[in-house]
Image (cartoon, rainbow, N blue to C red; front, side, top):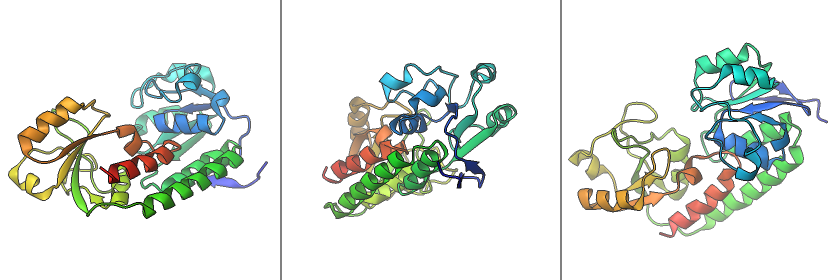
Length: 262
């Protein structure tokens, strides 16, 4: 077992913890922990932690990513809590830190950040061999994506919600995934997940629209209706493939290659 420490997204050093009892409040990281062979050490998850279904079914739910049941988590007696800067609320994490000894904070923002993320969790929870094998697969898939044919650079509006309409800014993981295809997102202002209106000025800026299947459940019917309304190409895309970091990112890169061929 390694005696080294592993540094998380806010600079906290963590020692290797082979007997850890883990609560994950991040759906994609719950999947990552299971893929690293750690499902047996997961003692709590959110209701949105749905993959891999066969393994997470046995793990108690503790609420959502924003609203968790503190007392339920306390009773589960975790040693480690895994959270994400974008997905979890600071006050909730602070309340949990009062009785959970180790808080592992994550913040992957580009596809390449997945390598450090997988090595961080593989290191802390003593699954380093599996982590390194996954990183090798990721590097090979990334090289295949770089070598794949692609179309011209385009500006694509990525929609995550309607009523109000919401998109993503250029400094998000989603935008950095799309950038692998030479697709950029328009600058809308208003933070990382800005609201917008379908103004003539916006339509002039963009080449097309991507409707994500999550968190809002856009469908082909939405895409068809919007395409008729705005007169631009509209494509329904798999939000999990483009927004879930962790081990899902390997399939995400393959999915990008498929998008490039559309």
